[in-house]
Length: 568
Ligand SMILES: [Zn+2]
Image 1 (cartoon, rainbow, N blue to C red):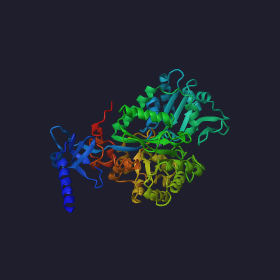
Image 2 (cartoon, helix red, strand yellow):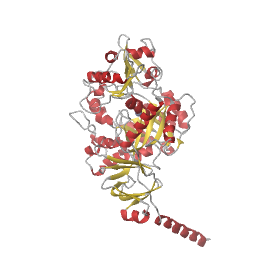
Image 3 (cartoon, protein in one colour):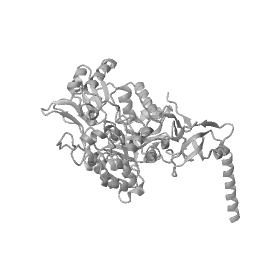
């Protein structure tokens, strides 16, 4: 018996040796640094791909000897760097398509800032594109990045653009919108209309008159329902266009964080399934269904339905608003305007949040909760703690908190103990850091925003994202932002140097740790044998580039399953 076992073992070893020796790779990459992001953080000389999967990494000599045949395609990197395709854990693809692809894109991440006047002129110039009966829909105005600080549109300003065409402009944060009087008239919202459920506010002035400002998405619904919907083909093209933009910056997997928020859950799931059925997506997508878009008892989709390309894995909650929009729920009041007593508002009562989460949690969904302010973070951590019960880390539920912007040390520790992984909108430091520090929350709270290094020191993971359309997708830019923590507006300053991370930590946050966060770490996120051949080819090695310049490195190609992604 023992002899037989030995014989079998010997045979198996011999067979596997034969398989390795006869390896017929479809493609071998060599000729430039190959940054694996494996547990040892190795760089290797060559990588072989067979049937869409990585089959070998190592020295050029060994990989060529074991895997090259006369049909193998050789890709000489010519000094360029090969890395795992970036994983973007928090985007809004359909919203970005609607806002930037179909509407007027007013986002401005450069200097100088816009003024009310330049914004009004941009909208006036866009009027000619609006068909009869259409709405002027725009996105990206941002009072916290407008000159003078906090210059905010109102119905009077928008009436200057047009009194005939209804206008609906969403703030860069996504949590605030502005409408003109024609839009109010068509939507039927008057001074007497009560605020909608779910935290929405039709803002009124001291005399009880609507100002044209809308707070939180439930207040948008009366307007959205009156707009002519985009044609199916325009919408589809815009969605695919947004996916290509995301792929063009090296992203191979992205998480859509609000399936259903624009057109309902069933329609948006159908949009994604349709695109993937036609093989028209240049990226893998993981979907989180928007809690408020799901009718009670909704179960058309089950947790983790899908495949390696498209999978629905989570439910997304929004616990509060936007910090730069002054709607995030804080434990202490905002410091703007001076002597303000306002500290934002929670979207849920504690019991309602827990009850809603409990049913989805028990069905096996991952949960992800937008919590910008420390009061919202407290509420979310308390709900998660109750859901996870004792020994939370052993349950491997990888519960997420999005943004984690205004926070305290205790919250970081509690999150790490619960195995909760935050994802930071690291552009907060770059584009809004000066506004947080100088005006909105003051220096002490501002220096702690996006506490990436503290998560690392406490033994936790973190990830970085754009939240597009809130900021532009660009993982290399997130490296620069999280490593330098330099804000954009002169005089520039480093915001919270002790929260700065190393380049390698930032790389993990846009590759393997982001893959872990979306339960895709067995599939992608590092260049290791057995994983899918999802790559980005970079002009330079970010590990050898000064941090401030990493954001300027050119993306030379994006590959999925060992094939170059077409961006046309
Ligand atoms: Zn978001």
